[in-house]
Length: 83
Image (cartoon, rainbow, N blue to C red; front, side, top):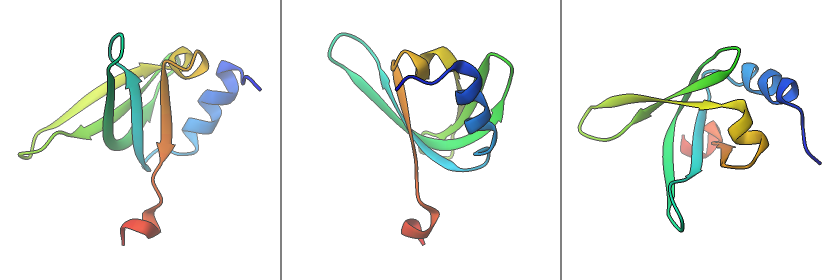
C-alpha cells in the first residue's frame, strides 16, 4: 500500500540519527548502495551522511518522492547487530 509524502516524512523524522542503507537506481541496470546516517529532514528532502572510506564523509540528499515512487529504498540497520 502506497504511503503519502507526509507519512513518509513523519516516519523519517522519528528516525533521525539512525544508521541506514540506501539503495538507489543509478542507471539502467546499475544499483548504488550507500551506508550512512540519516542526519536531517527538511520540508522537501532528507540528508544522509555517508562515509565513503579514507575518512571522507559526504552528504547525499534525496526527496520524499524518491521513496514514494520507489526510486530508492531505505533499510534501517539494527544497532544491536553491529555491537
